[in-house]
Length: 282
Image (cartoon, rainbow, N blue to C red):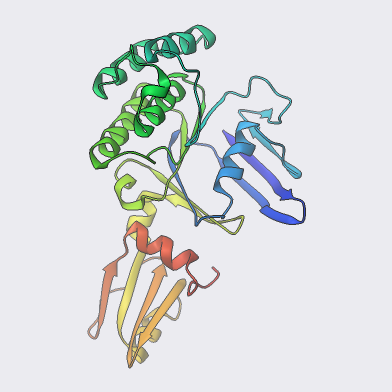
């Protein structure tokens, strides 16, 4: 479990994380979304113990996380992670020797799936393959918390699909908390179970994808009818063109009626309406 209690992070006078209180208590694959500069990498590094919060605390499985803690139970890989310039197979073997719970068989299987040449040195690999090596090492650790920061950068469409399969296979073998930051929203929707949206350093949204599927929708029609139907609902954003209005809702859907159109919202649309300039505070 990851427990945030009043976590604030400042760099000088700039506040990057703002008084975050949140519990991630269930095993699952969590998607962390946010615009550039929202604080996603800072949040992940604070969980991993790469940096200390300015105030507040983060605990993982009851252990307080700080830069002074050696064994946090967290594995973290950012997209710019570097490895020693050794053959891939040797890097995997070293990871297995260093980490007592490392799943060596899983790592070798993933090397075969991605056609990684174990004899090639790290610097000889493409950007995508370098990222894949780091990701395999991270997922093979079997720590209780896995943090992946933009892991699909440098991947083509086929590699991204394989990566999502890799993520699912890793979770199937070892259920734990896997938190992945990404900008490619719709592709990962079938892989994750939970969605966290970070906006300007604050948690804007945290719920399951199942709930998103049942509560995120839009109501479109003539202004009077839409506003009447939406009056008691949680409206997160609104578009108005002429006499037609579209209200974007996160709530229990109303009973369909004549003169209005009710449509499900995609994950990407929900994200845009929540954090876009037209989005209203919930």
